[in-house]
Length: 323
Image (cartoon, rainbow, N blue to C red; front, side, top):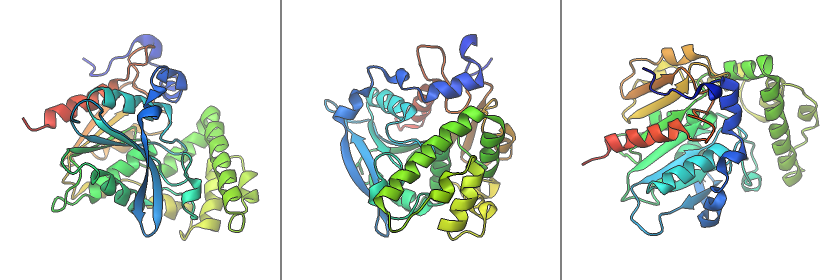
């Protein structure tokens, strides 16, 4: 019997993937913006990251959950707002963190975002956990945010703990292959991400006109071509392969994992090869929930937008809670 068994009319992986980012799923949930407090988080070495904290108003919190969005998403992405609303209703405090240059945060740092900027996100998550030192603290990441969540968990030191458990939903394990898949097979996804990335770059250029001129980047028609130029012109990496290799997650990353980590992913994910997850089977402290259906960050049970992944994460946290 399948652990996650959606209704037949929502099983298509592209339906699942597209539904995940539709704001219609959060009708009557956007009130979370009205009860959230903006927080500038120290990422170390002068880096500042933007986030939003939503606390329980009438009862003690069960814990603090930090949510990290995917590439070109934000703290306001539909799947992040949905998760925040779900966990807030179930008694948790929630922190929605924006990665550098995501959401309305482009002005906070002069340097550009890239996927290898792990140290600042690790430091930020540590500071977020410090906002509630008396509570169990959980980390939940989606897509590229799931990749960050896994790397943070791998860096977590049992001798100096600040997280209780980590979760990654549809995490990108091999960013080179995922970028190739996005460009090669799915024009809808490619154009969606190109539009959002170019909009982000234009915003950065307007804020720092003396540092950036993205004319060469903005004329390109694929995410891989843009990455090639971005890496060559604005990073210290040797080339695109070197850059992607810095945050490609192979088995070696998990050798010293001491924190309980759960991956929730789908075999039919259009952007991630299921074989990437097979190579992680048997890693200590790592649980792989690879479902037959779900697409990329979807996991809808039906057209009511009920999300199985949110429910599963809560069940796992309850199972691991003391007492």
